[in-house]
Image 1 (tube, helix red, strand yellow):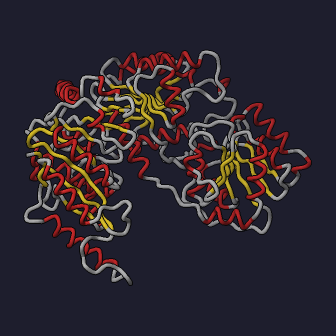
Image 2: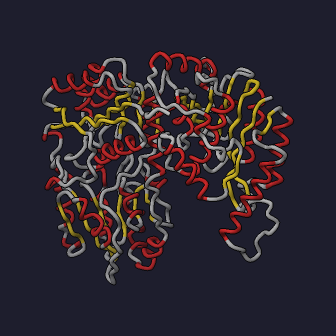
Image 3: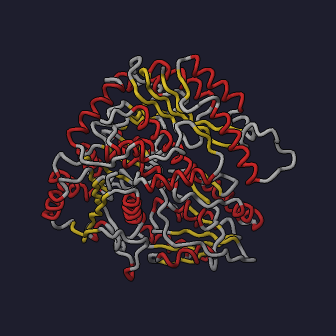
Length: 634
């Protein structure tokens, strides 16, 4: 094996000593990309923008970073020195991709100059936390249109931002959920109180955050207290201070102006009962995840991503933005300590690693794409069916990649041990962890989800053992989604898979213009498995879309515990019989070998769980597992 499967990436954006969520996200993104095996340089600013555009402090007070700084960081850019824009761009001509983290429109000229100096070699991606500022200025839209016209792809974090980016001319928009980049360290034990419910508003005070609306509603609800901790932004900050000084709120509102250092966040959250996010408007925010990590329910407006992050009436409350009556009612419910306690008891810690795996996978797909390797397909319109067709597109990608490809990771079938099978059953966590560890040992790009790694590793082994001609020219269509590392691993080996993102239940093979007997591999490796309905349709489509010897790789859940989701042993036999009727032969099923492995997995799982009262005893299937099936077209 060769030693590297990396891309050379330059991330251009703010980092320490700049403060705030964008700087933290940029820094964490570099850490995650580097941990995934890529060669990453963070290109940051010595001076980001004039103080006229930011009335608060730009740098972290006392120099203490919010998150661990990225080691390969250079502060070479200055808003007042156009020569730094050009010199930096020239130095980045040889990277695979430049990832620009957009901050505010006035910085766009610097980004455009840098990208122009970098030339046409690197792919260009813009990550936009806010396509337009919350308080837009004249000319902002034209600046963003100019930036979008220059780049290959735009990453946003919500549906509304995706629509806005498209409206402003972005050529290819990819929506990815904002992954957690949470300051403050580990949670501290909650500090109980016999007094009124204690609410917390954390972060810079700006008009769109609606803290003034919260203070006004509190006039009608005497049994809640509020702490406002954050910088006071211009007129909005002065307005909030005036409202907090109202005699009717005496002794119920504390204002702690100024930036909240990371080491103060955990103890501050521990002394409160709920987080408030009563925004007038929003795109995405880390504060819901921050509250959940520290065990606090959230009172939020139905704006941005809040409605998908807060379970109304379960671990928080949601109100329409700007609706005073609804806000008053929500505060009255929170003022009941027993009710607030029930909400707090339902709060679950957020997943801090899975979202990053998905996010990094999406960035990798964009950064390594050749001529648009990532296709966004809308089943309702069949837009991709009007294009060249998936087969010709894939062949073009392979040809283009060969013109530029450097030596990447080399992996031979003999590098994969025999226990990595094309068709197999997963019933034990330890087997998934073993697969994940082997992937790291083989220097494949990181896979944070062990189950996804298990599914992808067997699929990769099948492709290398059965369908690879040594030149990595197989036409691969991967419908697994970016939670699966399968496409990233294939690209690291030199393949050029076509990734499809499809909404709805119909498969993309049905939607796209695919010739009969034209594909080498179709993969559907969802970590949770395909549903039985999906499987039947996928098998039918693969029967004519795959050429002779082509592979269908899929996963499905098996077991008896959840009959509405998992496939029963009888259902598995039906899938195998249906596939055989359509000319698809199961790989690795020697004399019913897969059925025997299901029985063995059931026995192993039963030994670990112990005998459960009323449990099954016939050993027909594990209580719950994932089945990976590889079919070969006759």
